[in-house]
Image (cartoon, rainbow, N blue to C red; front, side, top):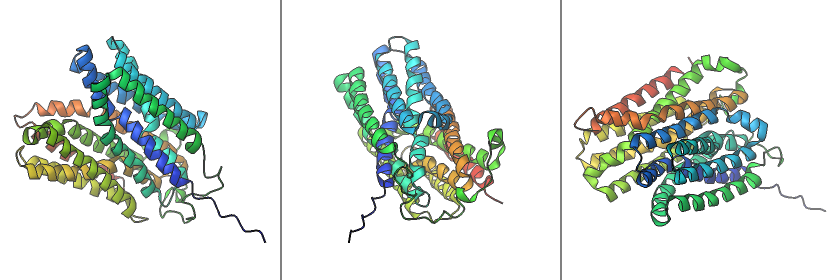
Length: 411
């Protein structure tokens, strides 16, 4: 008798691992990189803070426009080709930051870097993982999105050290070349496959649909109808507000911690926020019950962050213990602000609509948080106690995000 061949291992696990690596590079170069580039360009060219800060804002705004059109790009060119093009554009753009001699050259570089990094960002990771997972999608996405946090841990100090040792142009060329080689390999050997092409199904052996998930929703929202849908509007608004509060506070948190802890220790405390973000996202991904109201989970995550903002506020810029507690509580929700909205979309919209909803809510969020660092910087000028208006604003904005999540719940 001929022995039956054992089935191939579920390829989705490799997809999650590859998406994790993609997120490390995407956020490492496209999200955590620009603040470091800003300082490097200022030191090399002696350009104004306003000019270089405007380039950072433009980087994120261009990305918001491109990410809204990712589904159309995927349909026309395919996910692997778009991912490879995004990596190439990102590297060329970062090199442009490094070698720009005139302001117009810098602004041109931001168009390339902004357009490229979103093909390796939140919407892209969701598009890569979603075809492989339905029931286990929360856990799969949480693992893949943890690459974003690792990207900050690895690349923020790496960029600083590499630029100091070799100069910005050489650092950008070497790091960029390594990234392109790895991303192109993943695009050809991992992202090019689908469950159908390998004869597999979502979640491997698990065929039970998610309770209340997208497959159970029959209606679709074509064209402009989506922009009149209460669930979509509240989801997009809540994600945008959460990211605005989060990015605005994080952009200024280090400088507010330095007077208490000193520079090196303040950097360690900021690292605790990243560790808390990984832990918070992983716990939610693995422990969130099937069929649970994901909007309530998001509200809980924001409530924890509000508690963190209040702890930072009550520390009055002096109590080190409260500051650490505040950073940990605030950090615990950082990852969920990115990963939970796509999971809410999976549960509330049809499979066809999810392909539009996720890129659009990411685009709205990115277009909004691009202005957060400047807005929170202005808030710091309103009070002698610089941190007070920042922490109060973060708590109030996140409370508004909770209100929108609740407003969009099924009645």
